Length: 307
Image 1 (cartoon, one colour):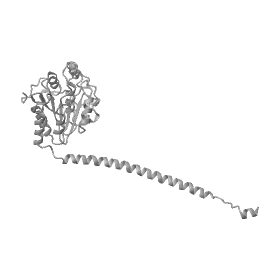
Image 2 (cartoon, helix red, strand yellow):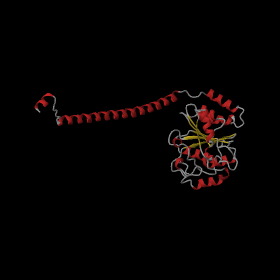
Image 3 (tube, helix red, strand yellow):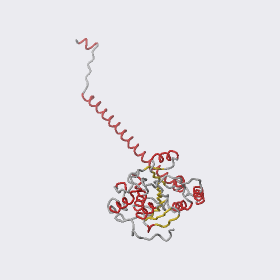
Image 4 (spheres, helix red, strand yellow):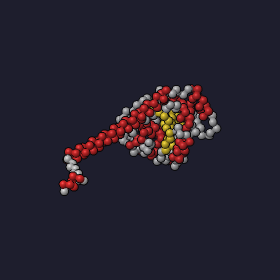
């Protein structure tokens, strides 16, 4: 027995302290790896936020540094657009009214247009450096325009109105003017029959400087009519939170009875600054959030500058 131990067998004893030391090393390694992982995640989040902020800042700086559209270029665009061969184009007088309003903006204009029309590219070009958004009732045409012209920002909307229902719809607004159909509100949360509440959420937060109602198309009894577009424009203009307190609202085909009646109800004759050819031009002021009526008087005579 003694010989066996001496010649070939070795007895190894592990002290408990050695086992504890190995376990402790593993814990330290795990803690170190966890720290590195956390540091990596924090760095990644900070870097993404920094890149996003920097990108937004650079974009704003580029827009600010970009020179405004010269008056000569604007006049040329208006001239060639109004002298094209299209049968459904606006007149030179109508286009010039809108171009003049866009040029009055002291900052990049926010321009909302109901209707994708012959002038779509013109509006985008005239609102140089600004944001121009188009709303159309035809989702396929809106998608086609965005695909063909990537610089165009267009959305589709489903109108739930009929031209033949105009008297009832206006009467419903009058009944709910202190509730769902208030002149100052966020239409995203409204159940007013004439309020468009299915636009992209972000559009309700924009302070619109110029709004053009040139859609939807059609003037037959089952057509949606422009009542909802005019009402929505009236609320958006009165609900501005910042920027210029005034909003220019243009209604094309103002010679049509339905557009004139609806405009009288919600844009109001006291705000009509010009009516010429087929265009009605209104300038609306921001209203107090407690306002309970659209017009100061339902019998206000037309502006002296109207024709």
